[in-house]
Image (cartoon, rainbow over all chains, first blue to last red; front, side, top):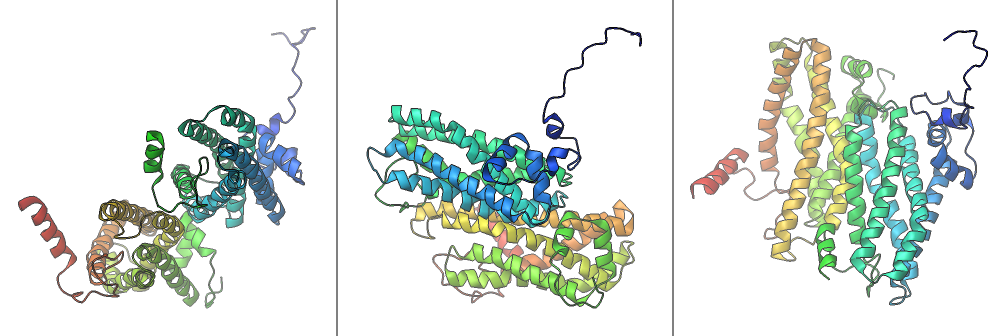
Length: 250
Length: 239
């Protein structure tokens, strides 16, 4: 092509936020990364649109405020989604309106706390330089992103809650939504560890399986989250697979 | 860190877990009382927590006993084989002092204990979700197997990760893969022999519903781990 072309090819304008979204760019090189995350709305927007900004901010000193905000977002969003979960059984038991949100929120937080030590150890084994507080921050980010996405699914879940009486069907639907949301949360966490010099992701993949198993078992330990029961917590202890089979047989 | 410091620097544990060559080499070359104290503390706390999770299924007292016994087995195995391991290293071609070989093995057990500590909340959660021991015979058998398998998998993972870091350290110190492999196999064989027998003596860890909760069985020193394995194999294949 001649350099003297009087009609140069049009260059498309840069897409806003594109540089920040590039995963290969080191943290701090994009200007967006360095903008502090203040407020809850900014935190939600950042974790959805600019996850690198959250990851960068978590690496800075004194980010307990941001971690706290992410946790509050996770708690509030899980409580809201829990209300939607509770609508399925509200005609049979009105108190499901408060037990389901409490169980969803509590189960998610306790599962994360149980898995936090192993996440830190796996991150160290994979060569990551992340400190415990950074790992905690990434886990809080995972929870926040997962629950924010669950809020996105909430209207669909509510429509199904109102229209079906099948416990296995609604349980499976909530499970699918949770798995999809968790996949995005895990993707955020993986991106975080990639920026924290992790040399291998094998340990983190194992951890994700452990976390999923713990969360699934937690849903059985706190049952019923969807159905009805006379007691807040179950009397009999069961593994989640056998509980699922029993629900399917009903 | 100050060479004569006796304070516990917990930041050394992530360094061990990451297998960072320079600081670990320095740890092996320069042994301080603080570092040894840290390794002992992590082994006692980490293996102790995991032991408590193992024993709590049977009874709280069993949890306390196992929390004491598990770290004791690791430390007694390290100390019991210290002389042999110190002699094996030069025989295989690595000229490190007795103190350095002891520190290297202690370091690998520290890594294993730290990993076990991180697994202990998971094991506590698993035990909490399992029907109590001997509540129902059929359930207990299944639950016993699943808990046992989980424990074995966790301990195997911790042991594998610790030995991976140990083999990396030996490779760096010796500069030869064959020397490092020889020493590692020699040390592992010795530790396996003593460690299994100590585990046999210190049984029970999980406890049995038909037997009382005890720190040591009345016949603790009778028989050996290998006798039991041979007996079980005979029972399985020839009867």
